[in-house]
Length: 573
DNA sequence: GCCGTTTTCGGCCCGACTGTTTTCAGTCG
Image (cartoon, rainbow, N blue to C red; front, side, top):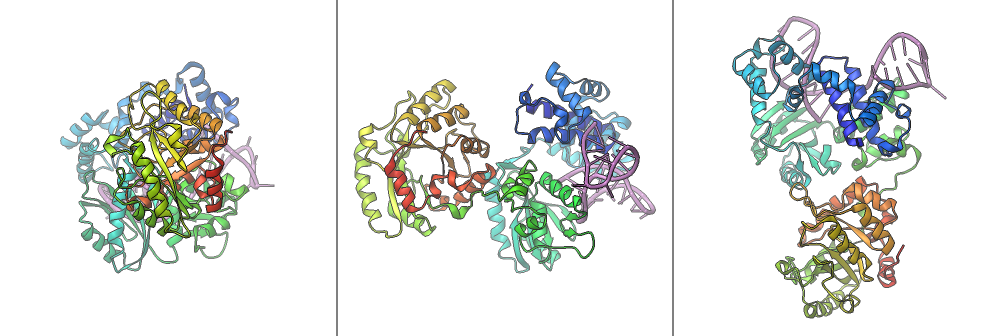
């Protein structure tokens, strides 16, 4: 039984207790025990005494120990006999929580979605005290919507929606400023909904404008402080708009950026000093409510170093910010982009145009890395064309003074593990990337053989999009990423964090492990157009989620350092 | 059920909104 399964059992126990109408604090105790386990860096086997972990006491500790010893929980088994398991599904229904589910079960014998629909249709639900006609209607609607859309949507899709919303918000005169909040601001890979915080003196007018201009499908909540709408997109994504005054903006933004668990940690901390935190500010022991002009100032008030949104997940970030500045990478640390394509293969722009756009972004250098010959769908370069391209890169590079364009290639690692060019060719390039674009369904063993061959080549400096995943669409090929990290370390090969919004590959979890192992990372956009260069921001956000420091990233090097890095060649570690 | 520089009892994060009520419980984030 692994950690995830143990946490899952604790959560299920909590849900059963909720349905039974148990003491709410007992319920959160089970959930908190699960969170404590998740936060702990050790694996289940590496923990000797669970009760020593804060949040786990005798009761939950016994449950965990029994689970590990026997694979079962007598607490859970008892609950299963008292409450049908099918009831657990009902919490997914909008507007239903443990308490209402418990009442529906005890008084109307509702056990699953089918019996809930029946109870609604026969008018029995509205007769229950606390329920009513409207509740019954909404429940019926919510049940029917239940499986119509995935619970969470990938960040690429949600960023697209957010961008289109922002285009509208900037044109509404009553809006002083606004910001993304919630999961998107924290750059989670997938999320349920979108959140915006808006400074305005006229929430009502602005609400009306937003409803009209976004052509919303439905308004599911409307008050003085907030509005919730459903967008007219394919999935019917829900968006929260929270309105605020100038003074409250930062605290409101902080609050709605979350995560909820992070906010809870901060409130516990404030409480130790007798202070109270809400979205309106910090209430001190005495005196007026405090607000702040930046989130950093707010953290500072709590005795913490600044914590960027991307790591506010309610794990150990508060503890770490207490000890020292986190020192995590920022977008401004990026000095170049090492992965881009031109019209020579499948890019949309000339080499010159791509280089100019990179320079305009303030970069000191970039590498041109078109596809290699075997990737025919992308008109990969034959040896002959690749060598001719070297001349073109040199001539484009000569037109810049404070910017260097390096020659490179994104070379295919072929299904049999061989590489698409000979070392004779590769040694003429400044920067060689290797990646897998074919035979995704091979065994893990064969995929690892391919990656090992690439890492062991003396000219391959970087493995691009190491897992080949496309978020929400494709899992990628089977990679033993731990083994790849060891290979990268051993051979002095860097691993990519591909910033493309559909990839974000490696993920935050894996770049964190790579950094811990001493492997260098490149945060690249793999741009095929100028527009795609903007995804660097998402790549850096993902790196921050992985607690990446600038010194672990090769494209944070200055122009001179990077030039030396190229010349020095691979340094096996 | 868990916890303690207010420590073995009495608390447990905080507020908006909805639908039900006629002062508030439940849900959500």
